[in-house]
Length: 286
Image (cartoon, rainbow, N blue to C red; front, top):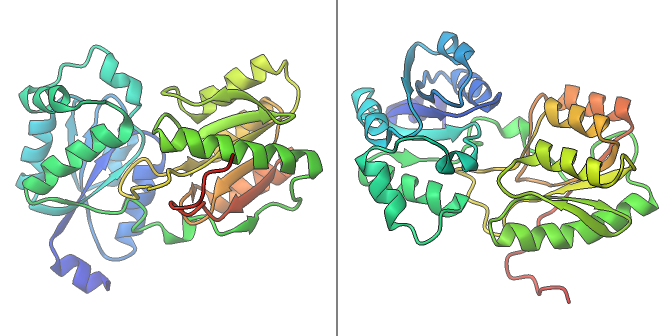
């Protein structure tokens, strides 16, 4: 769709969580002539985001009704969710408004897909389409192949092959998307804590010995939310924790500051390889 057609299709909104993701979406949309209205989650989004948007509003994490009100006020018809909202916050002291409380009560499970998928349906009922979060970030999506100067060595490749099988099973259960492996043994599995904390925990368990990190997409990855992301901060964590190899899914993983990220990985001796995701109907490995 051309920029003119995109603007004609209706106003755009950004629902912003933490990290660089929201800034990159704003920049990508702006490169197509689109100025987005930003609804930023106070407990997560960077204060600097307020200086990056002409139409900007803060809401608290539990204020679903207020968020929808503001999207309508700004005439938003198409919205992008960008930036992490830590899943463990649903167990914190946030006070959900009546609409979010009703939604949470109605969910049989409160995993990521269930929770954010339900919010997406509420938005759709309000006439707001939640679109692919990578829509404006095509150049940052990983291509297949070895991305760094060196490929994984024989031992790392074996760890990756083992780890991808484990990670795909975990991702299929919507528990997490990252596993950490050493010598074909699973050292740590991501739950709600996020990738960096999983790596740090694995390093402690492995006693600082070298480890491999495997991050995958979900079998039926909804590109509107919870898309796998790797940024410079994660590479710095890997360097500190003696990670020597990283495996990701091609076509479904965002690499923020891609060129700088790959240079940093090369400098740290970390091999990065992107694999085509397994087909959903692929026969399960025994």
